[in-house]
Image 1 (cartoon, helix red, strand yellow):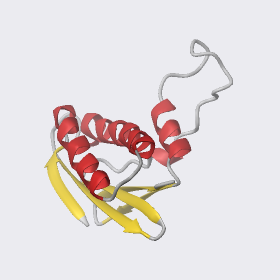
Image 2: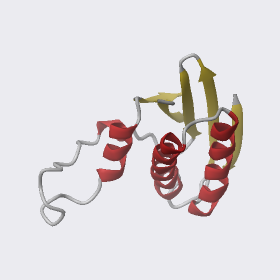
Image 3: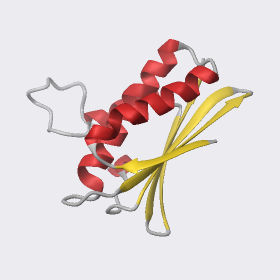
Length: 136
């Protein structure tokens, strides 16, 4: 398992993506899957950076574990910000036009649609959001 801890600020996103990409490339994940994972990482990390500690700044730990059989990756975000379960947010009505839809929620909806599993826990004062994606 690879792990990094850094400040939860939008400017750290490039370092996070580089860390994830290096791990996935070592495990020979297909480029298409890496793109899907990167989109999910960007959405989740930026939300943590913008809202978890607002108006202050805190840290986020990212853990990445790859498995060979079946080939898959598990990515976990851990922060000590305000408790928030993004999975409880109602999915947007994607049948409506952009003008008719309420603002917000589309990013986490995209993550839920593109990942094989996503779940949230709040343990010992920490938000723990986990995503899993198979390499197929």
